[in-house]
Length: 461
Image (tube, rainbow, N blue to C red; front, side, top):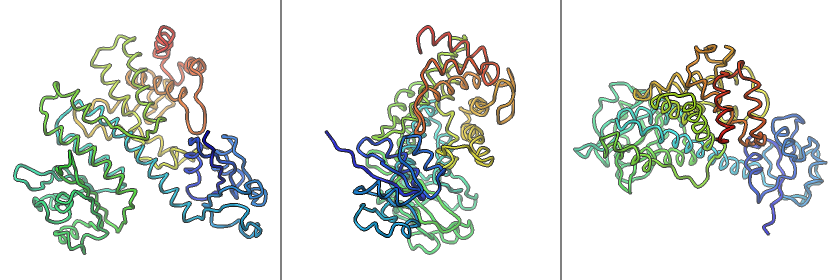
């Protein structure tokens, strides 16, 4: 039998990330939390999970005697407990901070891989390379929080040509192709390694300092696009002010580029969309060792419930497929929202709520950049309207809300209510069905609710 490692946490930046992660790890037991605010978000999460909390350092350290303490604070408690000595094993703020960074990198990578998986499943509808790259650079710029991004691919002449860009002027794009081995992009492709430059204008590897100065570019992170150990191009992000990309960010961008490379290679190899759907799905299947089951399974559940409702209502195959595709990416817009807001356990401020409410617009905007998927944008945009007209973003009422959105509302709500979250357990199916019935005519379309409940009663879905 494996023994649990018992630890305590002293609140500070990143403490919530650590607590939520450790609560899901069986080999680690959180025995207590010390925070100088009795009703802070950290203590609220801890209390919900039956973890001991206090704002009194003396009480905390007596209870934690002999245990390991992860200290993320500024040391405010030390004047109050000068007798600590060897009573506990303290992990200082610097080491605890490194642990927080690892946890954040892991959470962000999982979130990115989940988003990639959803994008992969809908990209089967096109092998048009320009459309795929438009989506890639749009998402890449948001993931890395930059305003400039570019993709270069090795063309038939063996040189790197600009294939797609976001935020670059025509003058910069017109500077011509780059030979493999030349400048930063060429070096990255030749060596098949990422390269980061804090200031490209002073970097001897960068051959276009004049263009960078005119464009207002300072820092650059460039990673290779590699398929089967062969570099086929490069993916770059740029910033106008000096920025040092962390090792975690470089790993994240590299993981992203690996999936992009597969998408690009398959788009180049296969021309016939109808014959290549299954091949692309297999090529784009994102296999991850650690998966965020709160979000990854959610999209599939929403798809399952939505398809059941659509078929039960007699919708056409085309309409049903559109709803199925939209269900896979209905939360894609959340990549534009800060992690601290998405994971906040208590009530959001007005400003925070406005940011969350904007995620359906962000998602619709992403989809609208791909012509063949543009028809899905309204379904995603109006997912959070209400049947009584009190929803957002446009306050649409009744039948003015697209039918696909009304179906997704019910499917999304049922999946959310019956799924575990870090801050609560899943609701029993019966109770979730009762909640849908209770809110029919107000939040949900009563016809859609009745259809879902009827299908649930027949097969349990």
